[in-house]
Image (tube, rainbow, N blue to C red):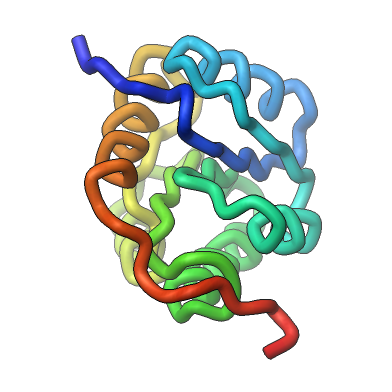
Length: 145
């Protein structure tokens, strides 16, 4: 079993469904994560990233995934937050074309829907551990820059 010290981790959950956001935050609590924030959209998420740099961002890629992929791409370019922040995508599609688009945009790992609690906990835990091992690169930049 993966052992994660989630007590120092900060997680941001971006999903249009309040039910799914609460479910994912509950799963993060199983990892010991106490600092979770939530946003309905990437537009709501950017100020939260700037305010409290997360160790992990969990983002929905369902529906029109363009907004989520653009968010990840802008994060990787350093337009806001840390470019090396881990991003866990949740996608109804495991088609290789979608996986390739997500990887190219900077999604660190993917979980297919319907989600498995064990899979979310394991993958999020691994990404949080990875973020604790590396030092943040660069500083925070605002989206207005």
